[in-house]
Image (tube, rainbow, N blue to C red; front, side):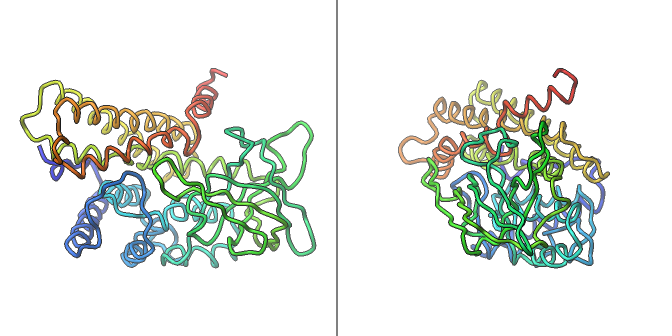
Length: 386
């Protein structure tokens, strides 16, 4: 068995999406041959502004967006195909990831025409990146308890507070921050709004959080009397909770929720070969069957988004199951590597590097996009159990 033959095609994929898949694979082959895309030794999303520019030149950022903002007006399934292929090949897409996945769609759905004209064409061109300003140091998973506040002042808002786990805040240009703009007695989810913050603005301090893997992706962002103009408000003042709920459906349901560790599995298959023990083949087969089931679920959410729905419950299910799969994948690969003695005596260096990094990285799977406990509460509520 070879990872080169490990394809994730569906037989009923629309013709346009099937052709797009071939185009993306050809692009990846070109990048590898040119030496711009070396085989990965880490799991998760990489960050490369140069790669984002090359992907943008193909028209693959903002793929579903209206043409007047630089998009291609293609389907959510076609965007899914691009995302899946890039992630499976470990293409570093972090420079545009958040902007393409959720910040741009939020502006399309809730933003003003001025905001769309200002930001969307730059996102499509790979010139403008966003980070997420939701989590706070003392709020944990209870997002409604956030303490960051925006006070109305002449011509805009003055913001004070802290945001944490703001991935790539030190590399990108803007943050969409969730802040409290008013207090409504007895309604914790009311009075919250979304504001666009220029990360170079006075009063913004970005401090690194170094992960267990020794990487600087996360940050804590301190906001001290940061002024943003009135035009920075997204949607209606006080409607931020409803807006961010829609945003989280984009964040939780994508293939990144089960493809972060895909390269680890693919590398194992390449190294394992056809003579693996029956127990190893059984474990690997079970893992791949779960991966394909997750893919079907995730694609169904993409179809619902394409139809204009807001599949919060369905996205929570995909994210919860995806988290379990990602951590199970690391465990299964580790067990097979040990049983087959695959990395002894300096062999399979890339598999060893991937496994070490995946083990360090895997705790993040249960946190990003919402903890499992919060997700299961959403699921229970959605099916009427609470």
